[in-house]
Image (cartoon, rainbow, N blue to C red; front, side):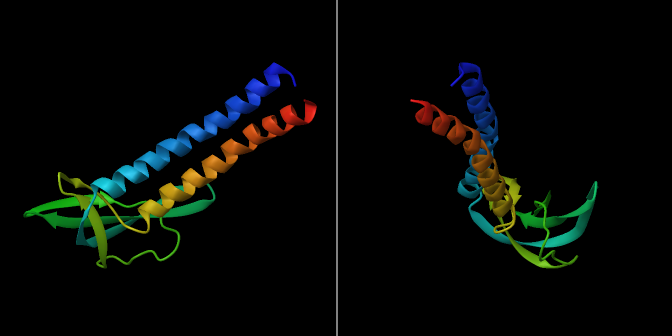
Length: 135
């Protein structure tokens, strides 16, 4: 196998594995730091048009120690809550402005991490298969 091909395939794989690890780290950081559960009110559903598709992001508000916080959840394609709906969120007790919607935000990060990992492993596996087939 040509060294250039091996470096290209492995480099391409690593380029996809790095974001997979970063997304996994962000997800883990959110779930380990945001430990307090509370109820938030959906204030609005933000719609973003990205080419051919329309994405929905819930804007929610919650109160911690008489202070109101507003945050935006991850992209939702199914089960978009209605304005005024009460949803369960988790926030960081040391930094209450950091929060996430369990089941939605964590799913997005997990799914993207898995997709990037699989795409990253394909060129690395192809490189390994070619290497062992030649030798």
